[in-house]
Image (tube, rainbow, N blue to C red):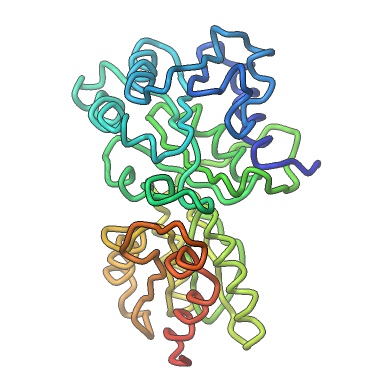
Length: 326
C-alpha cells in the first residue's frame, strides 16, 4: 500500500486500462502536451503517443461529438472536460447522441465512453464556473453518473467506468486533486451503483457524495461530541443510486439528512427524499432534512460563497432538527 494523490489515482486508472486495451483513447483540452490542466494526464502522452492521447481545440461540442462517433465505431474514448461547466456546450452530443444511441439503434450501436472532469465550486471562480450538474445528467436515461469522494474510490470507480459498455459521466473536484490516501498498487475494481457506509451510526443517517462527503464526515465527528451517533453513507454513483443502502440505514436510525452541493430543486436529495418516504415512511421518526446550496448563482465574494454552500454548521443544524434538538 502506498499513499498517492487523487490525480495520481485517476492517472493510474486510465493508464492501467490503456495498457490492457488499445481501443482506449484520451482526448480533451491540454491533456497531452501540457500534461493536463490539473496534471491528471501527466506523462501519458510520452507513454501512449499522440494517436491515443490527443489535444483538442477549445470546442467541447466538436470533440465530444468526435468521442461519440469513435465510441460507436469500436473505440472506448475518455473525453476530459476542463470543467463540467464547459460540458453545457457539448450537452447535445452527451444527451442526444451518447445516451440515446443504444435505444435509438435498437441495440445495433452503443457508446462505451467516459466523460470526465471537475465539477462544482473550487473557490472564487464565479457563477459560470462553479456549478453542479450531477442531477442534470442523472436525469438522463442511458447515462451512468459517478462522483467519487476520495483517491481509493476514484481509481476503482474510474476503472469500472472505462470498462462499462454505457456512457459514463465521471465527476471529480479541483479541490480534491491533491488529496492523498492509501491506494493499493494491485488491481481492484469498485462496481458502479454500490454505495459505501463510511461511518456506522445509530441516531441519524447522513447521505452525501463527492467532495461534500468531507462536510458530512466532519459534521458526524462534531455531532459525536454531543453524543449523537451519525451513520454516513457515500453514494459514489448517483445513477444508478443504491437505494437499498439508504433505506436499510434509515430503518436502523429512523432519521435522514441528505447533503449535496447542487441547487435544491430536482436535486439528488429530492429524489432520495421521495424514495425513502415511499419505501421507509413508517420507519421515519422525523421529516427528512436536505442541505443544499442556496437557490441562486454562486457569488464571487468568499463570505457569500460560504453563506451559500453546504457546510458543517448547516449539516449539524439539520441533524439536530431531525432529533428535535435545535
